[in-house]
Image 1 (cartoon, rainbow, N blue to C red):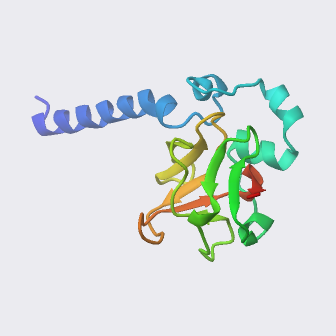
Image 2: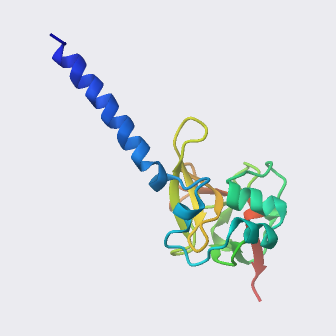
Length: 168
């Protein structure tokens, strides 16, 4: 007769694995353009995105890449204005929410209302919160809980995923 505790433990593991597999499309649309395009205002085929974006922008926004630290001029941008999605112009962050994190990527303590969406990224073997443009689903970066007040958040964004529009 099998040990009831072992059966329960095995059942829990199998149920957890099944739930995890079922949730993958909902948590991260990486590599799944159709899932990511659901409910987005701006959608294009991969070929069209390649035409519209530079190779660096395509790699970050559509392939979930990351630029090298300290490589983006937007990390040093100090003027008043708005940081917008490089793919669709969606306003993402006001310059007033930008801060110097010392990480080498443009960092913000809050996005503009309704500007971003989130998913769970497990590519490094642990969970991180991935940040996407709410209009096109493009990968922008990640958000961490080590930012300044009042939110305590650090939106660590790829500069190549954004453009800067100075205030008039």
